[in-house]
Length: 370
Image 1 (tube, rainbow, N blue to C red):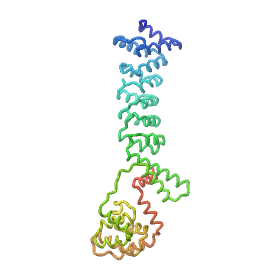
Image 2: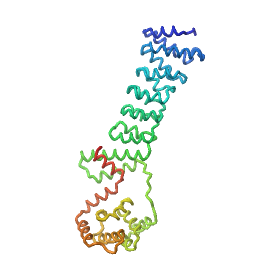
Image 3: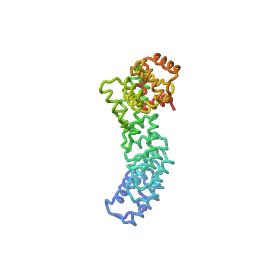
Image 4: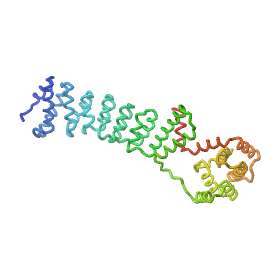
C-alpha cells in the first residue's frame, strides 16, 4: 500500500464528489481494519491526529463515515470520540450506540445537553449501566424510555423500575415492555396486573351492563393466576380443628358458639375464617370492632340465623371486652341492623372484603384519581 499522508486524506475530505467520498471511506476502513497492512502505534496516533483535525473541516457525510469506522475501535482517542458523539445525530449515532470508549459521565453529558435522537441512540447500546438508565429516565421522554425498556442489556435499579411501573398507569407504551423484562420483580408484576385489572373493570362497568361481583371474581382470579404471590397463609392447630369440623359435617355456627363459650377465641377465629373466607387480619378487626356491624354483615352473608347471630354477638363482645354482660341497647340496635340488611347486600359486601387488598387499593386509586 502506498504511503498515505495527511494532505492526501484532507484532499479526499474536501472533495465533495461522491466518488472521492467513497474512496475516503474505503481508505479509512482499510487503515483501521488492517485489511491492507497493520498500522504501527505511531501511525495510528498520527492517523487519529489527522482525523481529529479533519472532522472540523469535513462535511457531514465524511464525518459520518469517520464516526462509523471509529465506533468499533476500543482504542480510539476519547476526545475524538467525544467530539463525534456531540456532533449532529447523523454523525453521532453510531458512536453513541456502539463505542466502548465512552464512559458513563460522557454519555450522561450527551443525554443532558443533546437531542432526543442522541438519547435514542444511547438507549440502544448493548450494555447500559443503572446510572445511564437513570439519566435517560429523568429526561421524561416517552420514546426514549420505551426504547430503553425494550433493551434487555439495560440495567434498571429497583427504584427506577418502581417509578416506571407507576408511570405506566398513564403511559400505555411502557406496559408491554415492562411486563416482558426479566428483571421485573413478582411484587411489581402483581402491582401492574392489579391496576390494569382495575382500569379494565372501570371501562367494562362504564360501557356494559354487567354484575360487579361476577366481574370482580373474574378479574381477581386472572390476577392471582398470572402474578406470582409469595404470601403464604399461616396454618396452625386451630385451622386444623376448623377444617375437621367442616369435614365431619358439623355446623360451624354451632361450633363457633361452643368455642366462644369455652373461651377458645383462636378456634372461633379459625372457624370464622373458614366460614367467611376472610383474611385473618380482617377477622380480628371484625372481632374487636365496637359496633359489631362487620360481624353482622359477615354472619348474614353466610346464612347464620338471627338467634345464632345474637348469641355470637353477645359472646364475642364479652370475650373481647372482658365483661360479664352486654348492654341490651347495643344488642337491640345490632339485631335491628341484622334484620334490615338483605342477604344479597351482605354477600356483595363479603365478596368485596375477600378481595385482594392490593386489588381493592388499585380500584380506590383509580376512582380517586391523581
